[in-house]
Image (tube, rainbow, N blue to C red):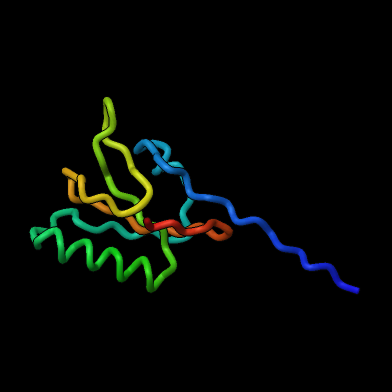
Length: 96
């Protein structure tokens, strides 16, 4: 008789500082919006399609109280226009 061993998936952090983001050894990472003068709608469409294709987590650069941070998910209140799609094995994606 075998037991169903279901491992609980970890959640990506809700918010990360630049240092925290850079200190993580991502399995994969791709940046969008840097030196890209296309309309934001085209950039975010590319971000969503890439995240869906790769199973990656989207992070948006946003203004926090005193610094710019990475916020989990696709944020349109993103003054910098920069997004990252990252992936870590064993983590659940939430791109809401």
